[in-house]
Image (cartoon, rainbow, N blue to C red):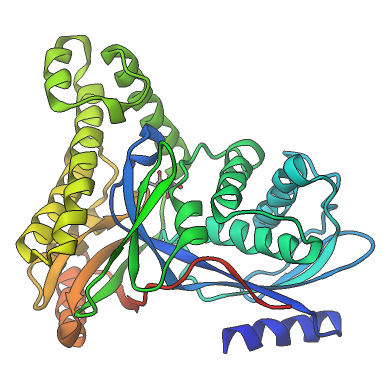
Length: 379
Ligand code: GLA
């Protein structure tokens, strides 16, 4: 349906039906938060909500229409440089710039973007735009590009074109997703292993409706604190530190740096353990690890907020919950929950009621199915 809507949008706006359509999913992260820029482990999954993008090579500039934001400022795929585009066009323009660095000149396109991603809830629409456009140019130009290669170019686009110092998790999840599986990623070497998520569980996005705030500055600050902690402990990445090393070096770290490092070290441990408890369907283990992750993000990493805490606390005591925690960078956005499939409607009702009692706000609860990663849908 969404694919047809993207094609219709293209036809309506540009007067022609294009030949190529791509899809890239958003992501939800089950566990392993703020570990990816520390060389650590993450366990996200690609979801059914995402972006459908149509495209056709044209002369002139790259022109785009989006189902959410309408038209955007045209750009030239072959000459765009960091700083010369704005709004959401920055993401396709940055992807063209990153692709050019590896594959040479990129043609200009006319494109329509249809999105089903809830905005501001932290399911990584930016990575989805990058991956959908990466696939689009790949299909239209015909170069060879692996999913991991595309994820790395998406990260280059974020870091060097957009100016956000993010890790690799979001792009890897959108590019390498597999239906019904979470992706265990070792972000140091980008090796991935898939773990199936029991079909008895629904993966739910619990949207606080609190838009994320201060994300870029606070994110970059956390990153620097992690780098400082790694340097003080004599390792290149916090991935190489353990709790014993942290205790040994405690006097060399101020309280904040110590707690940031403790979050990353314990979160890496939790993420590795999570893979086993998911495989063996150990519900107590799933609950404890997801709660432990949330507690650590709230107290040690300080990236939660009253709304995320209220949603997680409400989820922990709602019927059918298997586990819940905040997901994504934090400072607003959403929690992720694993919920007994047969209890989804009761869980949603009680969890959102509890959230409203605590915050006075209406949240939202969405079931997400776990889907394959970015792909070309027609050619
Ligand atoms: C954002 C970044 C990711 C990752 C998460 C936190 O989504 O884009 O690279 O660091 O925050 O886990």
